[in-house]
Amino acid sequence: MALLTQAPKGTQDVLPRDSYKWQYVEGLAMEIARLYGFQEMRVPTFEHTELFNRSVGDTTDVVQKEMYTFLDKGNRSITLRPEGTAGMARAAVQNGLLNEALPLKVSYLVSCFRYEKPQAGRLREFHQFGAEVYGSDSPACDAEVIAMVGEIFDTLGVRDLRLELNSIGCPECRARYHKALKEYFAAHMDELCDTCRERLEKNPMRILDCKSPVCHKIAKDAPKVLDYICEGCSAHFEGVKARLDALGMPYVVNPTIVRGLDYYTKTVFEFVTDQIGAQGTVCGGGRYDGLLAEIGGPKLPGIGFAMGIERLLKVMDACGAEFPEQPACAIYIGSIGEAASVKAFALVNELREEGFWAECDTMGRGVKAQMKYADKLGCRLSCILGDNELESGRANVKNMRTGETHEVAFDDLIDFVYDAQVAVLTESIRETEINP
Image 1 (tube, rainbow, N blue to C red):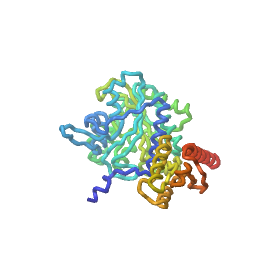
Image 2 (tube, rainbow, N blue to C red):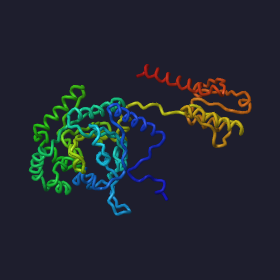
Image 3 (tube, rainbow, N blue to C red):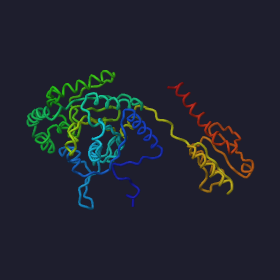
Image 4 (cartoon, one colour):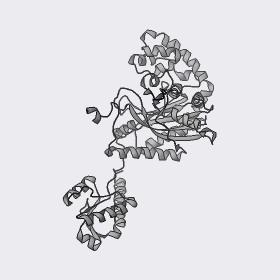
């Protein structure tokens, strides 16, 4: 029976005291994306397993160890999405979006699933905000995507993030790099973990991303991909950096970034922090010029990113970023007797129709208990309706913070609540100006 009241390992509940923070972060990210021309797309939580095998790569940790894969009742292999890009690409191909005006820009909020050891900043169910661009191979597109991520972090007040860039080249120049890696790691064959021994022939770049401490130590002295990229890929990377320089956006070239998924080409990037321990990558992304063709679509380039919402909120707390004040109930209308209860119910619904959070008694509480409940809700205003108030059509409305009371006609209640809300907002702005 205990399992009935315990969430599965590696998952977490988002409670009302925290959900408003999620809404703030997600809403702001989607709004900034809209200003950059991105439109939201929503896709299924699960896809055919082959989609992830082909796109993410069957030599990656995600596919080999972490995916939630099962047979459905039709004996089809289905996988809960471990990341967002593959599903977005599939949806763009299936629905003919790539036949429309290019570049196509889409944004998304998704839950993802990976069977990993739960730890700080890493869960088995986690959430991402992401965006994808299809159709442009220009370095200007890369820089625009990175700049958008930077603006989201800046607007949220996230500090001390480090933008790290790399280029892992195209398939042609990467073949030369793979050869160099094979020669290097072959000399350490006996020291590599079993998984990396298998990767050596199929995809030696995956060894660079291995979480084994021994493999990680060996990989530190491996050849660097920037020494092997072709002239075209080098020029593209220089174009990205030039545009970031033009924006005054600082970055560090980190030749060890390869990202954990096979579909990446050319530009890869991460926004990294040292404030939340080892799991310091808050956002990662890059170019994937072969992905659409790999899953049966047209030969069009693409670039995208995803940021983990859980990690982002953790970083915001660590750096003292400010959240808006949690929404509070505008007014509680208490009542004494059935007739007053009916009137309170009607007034509350009129206020809700005007966009105010208003409450009345639905528990049959006494007056004292109603006011105690209003206080727990953090209501800004309250009043009690009884026979006298019904007869006069007026109520004494109390400011729950200052104790001031005002006699207000029922017909003027909406305007009074509106003015009170404006006063609270004005005071909040004034305090921000005094204590920025």
